[in-house]
Amino acid sequence: MGDEVDAGHAYLAASSPAYFAAYQQFSNVVYGRDRSAVPPPVRKLAAIALLEGIRDHPNCAWRIPCGLRDGLTPAKIVQALEITADVAAAAAVVHGARILQEELASAHDATTSGSMV
Image 1 (cartoon, rainbow, N blue to C red):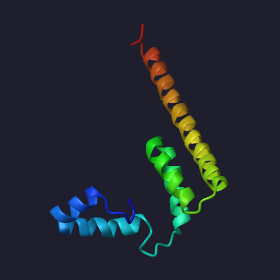
Image 2: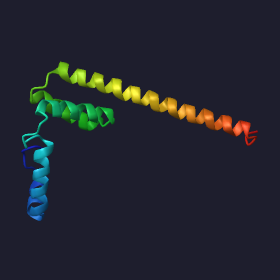
Image 3: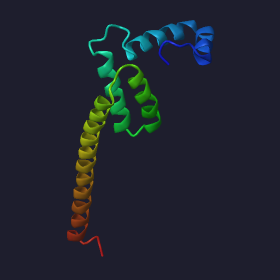
Image 4: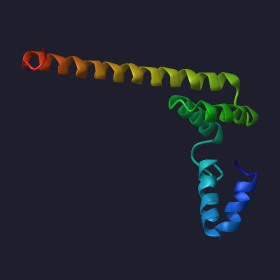
């Protein structure tokens, strides 16, 4: 996406000029062309980390080469991915432990109330 206008963008511009103008304004914010307080390299690293965190591998596979072309170093991308793994894995462990605790409590409650055989 970004600045290139492909067939989809051309169709939007022709079929709904008002929508396309709003889309362009939104795109300027998303891609950091609005003098954002967050510098573009940080935005790119955040996008890569978030996409991996939600396991959107195809989108991440598209963002990493874009980030490299825009000046991100492999070391910075790896560090962002390491942080994501730490945070996402920790959250998964905590979430899993909560589910286990709830399941055990539910089974215990069912056993003590006599509803389990």
